[in-house]
Amino acid sequence: MAYINENFLKLQHRYLFAEIAKRVAAYKEANPQADIIRLGIGDVTQPLAPAVVEAMHRAVDECAHSETFRGYGPEHGYNFLIEAIIAHDFTPRGISLTPEEVFISDGAKSDTGNIGDILAAGNLVGVTDPVYPVYVDTNTMSGRQISYIPCNEANGFMGDIPATKLDVVYLCFPNNPTGAVITREGLQRWVDYALKNDCLILYDAAYEAFIQDADIPHSIYEIDGARQCAIEFRSFSKTAGFTGTRCGYTIIPNEVTVNSLNGHRVALNAIWDRRQCSKFNGASYVSQRGAEAVFSPEGQRQVRATIAYYMDNAKIIRQGLEQYGLKVFGGQNAPYIWVRTPDGIGSWNFFDRLLREAQVVTTPGAGFGAAGEGYIRITAFGSHESSVEALKRIGKCL
Ligand code: PLP
Image (cartoon, rainbow, N blue to C red):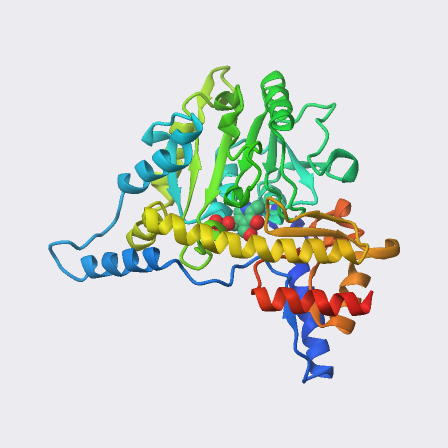
């Protein structure tokens, strides 16, 4: 007889984006002429950079000939990409990594979830609230207990260092959904906490490319002690429009160890390598060649121009909402704008009002956790025109 993994029955219904879609569909049915602007989900809208497209075309052509055809690649990822990542993203920041410490993946969602495979079910896992739901769902699937760390205006959405002992903690900066960043000192406090409490930090830096301020850390390894206690996840999705193409990477320094029941410390790098070799056959050659091209001079120019385009949208939205008298966070080093609802109305009520009166779709903060109540998230991933138009319409309905 087959039995279900009971942990999956404990998952909350994935109601957030389904509920949004339901409400938008109902509105559209009642108002077929409505011109709806979608600034809700966090997908990008601008096409891949020409340098990336050309590299992917070349890679496909290679695979069209038996002499240059590529089959299964290294589970760890191709060296050409690993070396480009280290040379571009880490060496200039004074971070030294060996190629074995970099694992190419098909994106940060899989890795932030799958990393739990190599951690005991008994670990108590801390997540910041509001939270990217993948951390909660994947740990629930593994039967782990979750402790919520409120991120609010009082703590600058960075979360207070817990008074209790956590075994694992997920941090995400720049943050989805609040758009908050963490200062060097703030991140040092988390690393110090982790070292003191033998806690593993899982650092999601999927949005690091959006950081504009020079003093904000891009990588947790810019912080003293992080090589002993932190794993970092990165993604080409938002950096370079790879949400459909798929490529990301995970850094596990050789020094990161955790306990085993026999009393020995175990290096996570070797265990993750073992896990990946058994369960993952690598990101596609074509995606990895595309990702490599992100680091070419033209690729850099092009992806930076697209990020600047999104950040311009963020500025328009942020400044416009402030002029309307709303309290606004994020949007300066992140593509998300976190807006306090006016007059303390609920997230879903404000969502409904913006849909009905402005035909603008946002995301209710309450959908990301209890601490998100009283806020909505607006993304900067729309077009310039739709961001300007959305703002105009929101102004009329406040
Ligand atoms: N981490 C965060 C915080 C995200 O918001 C997202 C996507 O929205 C991801 C990871 C997923 O990235 P990927 O497309 O690389 O799987």
